[in-house]
Length: 104
Image (cartoon, rainbow, N blue to C red; front, side, top):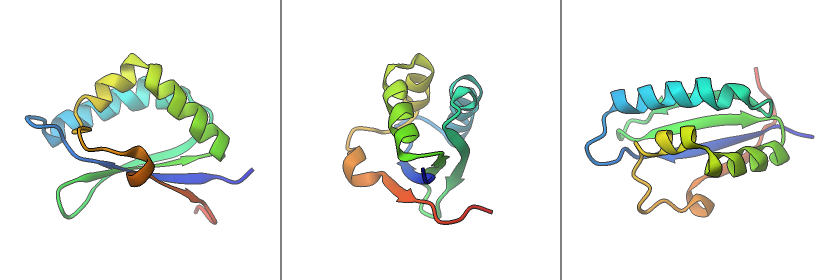
């Protein structure tokens, strides 16, 4: 069982600010992510172009798939996703799922 690291791009929805993203991320972390044993770490970063990346390391690919399924059914996650512009988002094309070689 090898960890995987997911790079999930985030573009803010119209009218939403970085403050809105940070507030929603805090609730998402505390009320959802913190209760998922398959999530090893999570980091939200601002890219130079003004978009964001949610970098999440999972214990395994199976844990990643399990969490994604739960996200689709969670009101907490829906609130987090509501600050994002998902109109053109294609998870198959845009989310990078990578096998982690080392974590320090």
